[in-house]
Length: 372
Image (tube, rainbow, N blue to C red; front, side, top):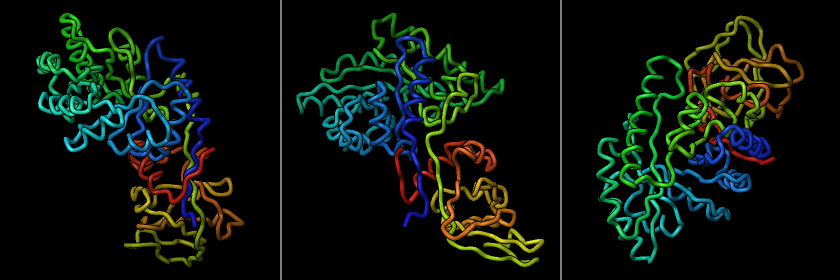
């Protein structure tokens, strides 16, 4: 039995890719982030659409994700966005995955592994300009490039960095983003002056590509890394982003109906008390399937064209909704958790979350998935 169903609209996904491509300057490529099972949308199917639509690159977090893409018959270049474990280098090379690196020791291990297989490994240098997650400090990157030049079985094809605050429009966060961009641009200039500039250069994520569009898609920058935007949720809005369509709908079904008398409590810890006679429905989803507990007594779902508020504490595998004002609900009634009537970003805002903090766990928690 399917307790929750993720419906993935691949036509909407193709539309979003084409909408963004039409916006980008000529020659700027797209790296589509399909990590975390394509944000819960299904890495195999999403990767196939990306290939059909002419996306240039795919981005994963694990080598295993790369294997799933290859097994799906997709031959697009794949960039491992996380650092590679030394034990995975040989497998990554067999899968023809480009590895991100930030130190010479790992680069040497990759080169040695490639030499043993009679291959040349492709790598991209990850530079930290202010995210403090992965990457070599921008001021230390130039010596690394010089050292990489001496490794015979390594081809440095790219340089990347990650924006930390592009989603924010506050003056302080915009200044921080501009500082990151300036650090990256200074490194690019230095590399160009010494004939070390790699083929691909990217720092623009979804939010950065919208808010700082000109700066991340011009000059030496020639590829953008997009995830949230292509899945249908612009974290920054502009007139052109109105054409972007959400790709996923999550539905569930009513598994129980109950009548409340005035004064009855609902759920753990008695966080909701009926003030009148009410009818409630129980849904077989909860925080164990990615529904954020922050939606308790605040969120809502859509059923029979109406909105039903979430009441009581959200449990591991159940959620209660108030259906007193909605007639005709029966066991098995379909309920939209998010989708056309209730976009995931609106629900996430209610919970005080970024859209991906709601979208990804909820889609990954779905018990079934269908593609249209």
